[in-house]
Image (cartoon, rainbow, N blue to C red; front, side):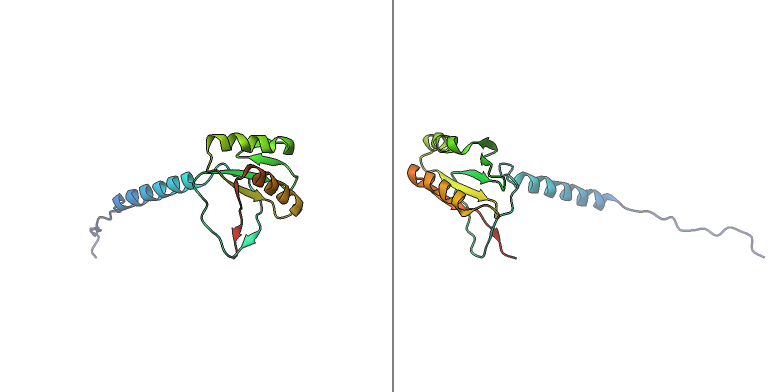
Length: 132
């Protein structure tokens, strides 16, 4: 009877490649989170099949379902909306307004903001989500 212990092979786990993978994943998520636009109020946008890229010199105007108006992230009453947009226009004459309107609001609210943009001679673009 052979009672000697048999020599088992030494098992190693090489984790150097895992460090590289984790570094690239971390880098990817950091870059992806920096690309997200923090100046947008979360809304449910209407859908469109023909989307276009947004212009460079823009401000975001949002209308929530509770009819609250936001210029960038600042809440502005409707009466002061024209003056607030005009101050942005003075800083940048080639301004384009990107309108983020909740899909449940009445179209009259969008038309009222369009009238303000026409009065100030500013381009206005309605933001939509791509159709799925």
